[in-house]
Structures are given as C-alpha cells and as structure tokens.
Amino acid sequence: MKRKLFFKKILVSILLTFTFIACQKEKSKEESIRTVSTVDIDSLNPYQVVSSASEQILLNVFEGLIMPGVDGTVVPALAESYEISEDGKTYTFSIRKGVKFHNGNNMDIKDVEFSLNYMSGKLGNNPTEALFENIEKIEILDDSHIAIHLSKPDSSFIYYMKEAIVPDENKDHLKDIAIGTGPYKIAGYQKEQKLVLSKNEEYWGEKAKISTVTILISPNSETNFLKLLSGEINFLTNIDPKRIPELDKYQILSSPSNLCLILSLNPKEKPFDDIEVRKAINLAIDKNKVIQLAMNGKGSPIYTNMSPVMSKFLWSAPEEQADPEKAKQILEQKKLLPMEFTLKVPNSSKFYLDTAQSVREQLKDIGITVNLEMVEWASWLSDVYTNRKYVASLAGLSGKMEPDAILRRYTSTYAKNFTNFNNTRYDVLVEEAKRTSNEAKQIENYKEAQKILSEEQAAIFLMDPNIIIATEKGIEGFEFYPLPYLNFAKLYFKK
Image 1 (spheres, rainbow, N blue to C red):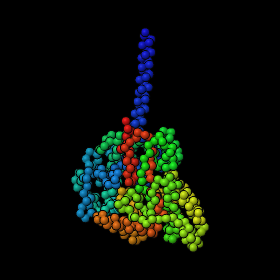
Image 2: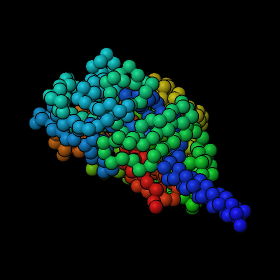
Image 3: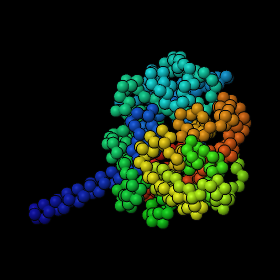
Image 4: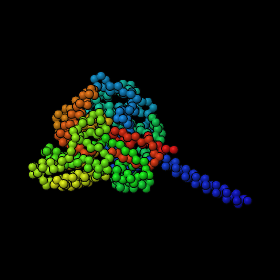
C-alpha cells in the first residue's frame, strides 16, 4: 500500500513538473517578440541615427517632446502640451512630470535643455538636423516650461520635436549607453548580431504588454524567411510579396509604406548631366512592370517624390506611359547607343535587387547595358548617400510626417542632397512653404515643387512599395504609421 502511494506521489510530481514547464514555455512565448533586421542599427546615440531601419526600432527606446500618431499628426509625449507664438518663432512646451529615464533617474527641465542644445549644435557639435540651425535660443521659463526661440518661422518645426530627450549625465557616453524614456529599454546589444529590448516597468504612459523583443541582425532575406517558417522568429517585416502563398499559417498585414523608391541618375556624371538623357531613361521604364516583378503588384507607381498616402499635398501628375521606342530614338540621335553604366544597389532588402533586375532588363531592350553592383548598406550610406560617389543608384527615401522633410531632400543647400538636384525656383518654393503658417499656400507651393521634380527629371520616380508584415497568428495590436516605426509597445498576444 505504501509503495502504491509512493508511486502515486512520484507520478503526481512528474505531472506537476511537466505542467509547470509547459506553462513556463507558454508564458515565455507570450512575453516575447522575435524578429530580424537586415541591417544593424546605426548607433546607440539617437542623434547619429540615419537609416529608417534604425529609426523604426529605436522609436521604442527614445522619445521626444512629441511622438508621431498613426494618422500623421503629432501626439504629446514628454511635453504634455505646447503653444506657438503668433509670429511662428517661439514654441513653448509644458514638460511632463513623473517621467523616469531607463537608468531610474527622473527627467527634469535640465535634461530637456541639454537635449535641445545638443540637437541644435550649441554644445560644440553639429546640429543633428539642418533645420535645428534655425534654433536661436533655448530658454528655461520655470521647472516645467521651456521655450525654443527660432530665428525664422518654421511651419514644420514641431514635427522634428520627436528627436530624443536624453539625460544630461549621459552626455559623454551617448555612443556607448542608450538611455531613453520609451516603453522599451535596451537590455543587450551585440553589434551585427542582435539587439534585445525589455519592457520599461517604470514607463510614464501605457506600458508595453510584451516583456521582451529580440531583433536579430541577419542580412540575408531568404535566411530570414526560413527563420520565420521554422519558428525561430515570429514577426517579420518586408516580406517578399511573391512568398505570401507560403505563409498560410501566418497573419499577413499590408499597407502603403510612404516610401519613394527612386532610380537616381547623378547629373554631375555624364551622360546624365543631360536632362534629355534622364528623360529618355524614364520613358524606357514601365513602372507597373517593375512593381509586378519586384512587389508582385503590391505597390503604387509614383511620378514625383511623394507617396500617394500624402494625398493632401500630392501633386496630380499627368498620366505617364512608358515609350521605349521613343527613348531609343532620343539616345540614338545623341549617338549614345550602345550605352553602359553601373547601377549601385543597396543590399538591405531583396526588393532592391528585384527592382534593379527589372530596370536592367527593360533598358537592355533599347541597347543599354546596366551592370549591377550590390553594395553593403554601410558602404552605400558612405559612398552614395554621403559622398555622392556614383553614376546611378537605387534609393528608398522613407516617408515623413510632413512634406518639408520629404521635399527638402532636393534643395540645393541640403547637405544630404545626394541626387545633386539644383533648381532655384524649387528652393524658393520649399522655403516659402516652410516659413508660412497659411496651409493653402503650403499646399500650393509643395505641389508646384513636385511638378518641377518631375519636369526636370530630378530622378526616375518608380514606386511606393507596400510594406508587408507576417506575424505568428495571435499577435495583435500592430499599427502602421506614415513613417518608419515598429511600435512594439502596442503588440499583445490574443488570449
């Protein structure tokens, strides 16, 4: 009898152990998002972030005085509210109380002052955005109010206040230690391997529902897809549309990405210094064929540098039809055929390569040989985006919340105008829109500026590709934003 009781106790103990382990596994599953990024983050220093791939992750860690809303509006964040003076030159912010940094310290007005001075280049560094050169003075009014005085009115300034607020005591370690106020903090980072985010239990707002987000750094898109199929990851962005039929066991989310994919033909390099040559290349490319090959039809053709999602500001372009025969005729008259050039293609996403292959095949039909040069992301940022060392390149220009941030990329004075576009009338239009508070005038100017980009063939404007995301079934709460932002804090597992 005692032996039977003994074995019953052992059996119950074993069953309880297995139940506990199963519960722990289920709990672990429900507390973890596992995903990948094809490129590493640019920096732990939020003021040195360049790529949209970095920004979309680090917006979970760092917050500004405002944050982006899903409809493109600004949402109060570390500032509870703000006021703009009648002349448009002074922005006064009421700073939120009860905010803690990830190191446990309280955020105070001095941290805000330091961050604003840093981003505006008033501490011996360069401004983090050219727009911040317009900041004349940062003035603390009391322990909860701060005023930013601008040299000139700027209608787009408020959108840039999503720039990170960081603790002043970390000023000498911004590259080494990431300390923000966001719903997630960085729990671990191994360069070019992985980034781990953990839930900020002391977050001032609505806390994240999922405890841990692990982002593996994995440059190969096919490998990443297999990681999803195997269950190693349960959240994957930038899905190849052609692979959707393989994902019947997963949830598929899709939306326009507010990204402009362009083929930039450097006007400082022959033969693309000739506008007629650039126009001929544009005529030779059927954008719908590119979208079909690269995105399985999931994208929208564009005719200037603005996505259709920016409908209020979008210039209504005349219908554009590809005409390869006319393109060939123009190039023959200029005695440029046969032609050959190198197209630099960033390796950060497979759709760049698919797009490049479609462009190459279409140009081949009119006597142009396109040599594809796949470029590591870091090298592309350095060689093309920064130093403008290229003849032709594909580029994905990420969407922003306001048109100035999109269109100023083509102004002659913009430091990162890698397309080398230069048009005085264009510069004036964008500047005037920036300085007026009259929205009707802004819309008028922005539309005329887009028309100039098209007429002057500032680039070959190809498409706004849909962003396609696959998740494990049961993951809910994902929201699309008009700028790169993976808001992990909104995600949860459906019970």
